[in-house]
Image (tube, rainbow, N blue to C red; front, side, top):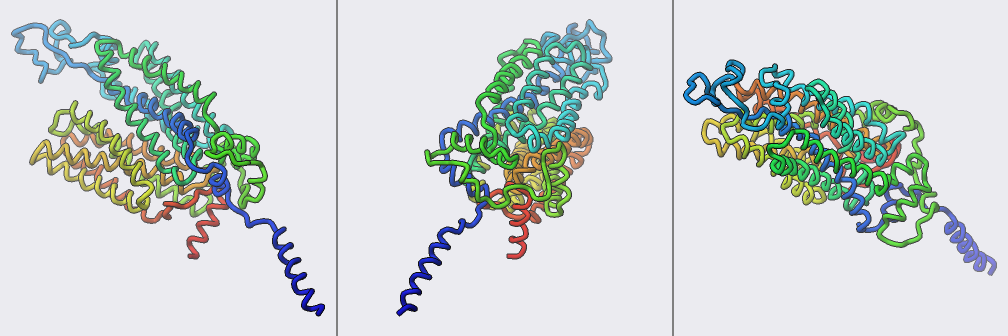
Length: 518
């Protein structure tokens, strides 16, 4: 009798004990997913406001296409057989035998009399800009992961870019102009990285890829806005372009300071839980009760081996762990090949037997469908196979451009557009793939390193373009081989589609080990 009575008592006690046991630990990503809920209007507005930085970034990246251009000229003396605007060397003519087609102040070349200067001097402003991008990328890359955070880094970058662009208006000569272009590139170096990382960390995994593409659309629209601004101000000083692009960028940086939210993931990794909870409450799609207790049972709450408070600790963390170093090496090599095509193709359009003005416009327009394709396929196709397909397609079409030029100019520009479009799409996918490969504590630094590799590939491409004027294979042929070969190594990366992102290195390493075991 006693046994029959004690058994249910023991069972009830056992159930009571089990009911008091804490639930199994969950990750920060899962907790934020539960708290944020579905995609809300507030999250969309935040993501759009952050991504808008890339609109102004694109303007400063390509503004030299119009400000540093060498204007067309014409002969002033009729019947002078020694002067021919199509074939004569302007430096071999007397000053009174020719004149510019536009006022002197429309370009730095005509205003400062650089038409007979060396190519090194003419290209110094553009080279200074890219050198600034490289320097800024290495020096400022880790600040968003360590002391400043995503929001403050985005604000400071936009502010530095806009102020340096505004000061460029007052440049008295090409040397001061080049210095300010270096500062401009230095400031904007981390804008794209911060914008993509911050916008993706403000939403759940379901919308992470689609939100990341908003920045790509903004960048394409910023690029396309330049011809419109230049056309409206045709005949005006080149300084006018800097005014109309720097002023809105300055106002935008103020909006970032007051209206953009910091990444709750970064705040939590930094131990600022109360601030993270307040931001999650403000952007959540539901009015559920979110309190600190929601974050009290997390696994991998903090780094157990590393602290990312120091300036360059994030880079140290990335390279000291074998798995993260391998991933970083792969994405940088792939980014290098993509950068050669992304920056080299537009520069090499003058080597093709097609109208250069129309071809530049078509290349700029191709970025919009590239962003659209990325938006629709990012949630449906695997990252590795998509990247592999687009890089190979870009490589094949780039190499075929050389042969097609002997057959048809239309076919040649068609293949060039397919190659450029594929490279743009691959680069968009690579940026989203990289933010999924690395945890929150080093994510910004990892994407910065990828972007540095892309810029490095772009910095080398002008040399190949110059060599390609005599031998097409040295430009489009090398571009195709590089993006094709570099793209092949992405097969060594793990697949991240529909996988929750990690927030610490320990958490990502745990997932990596589990994947290897399975």
